[in-house]
Length: 63
View 1 (tube, rainbow, N blue to C red):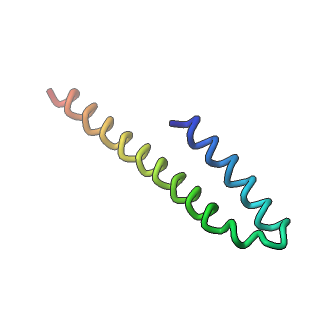
View 2 (tube, one colour):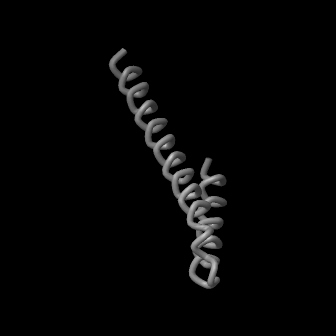
């Protein structure tokens, strides 16, 4: 999943450059917004998986 996040971050940088360097860059805002949303979704998923691991570890220690 880290590889996906890295690729998304690289794409965000590229799209940000397009937006700022081109006269018609504003039309790429939806692409930028979608990439940011994908990055946030992956981060949230990572956070949930970590929380699940911690809960499971706590259950193992309690048993």
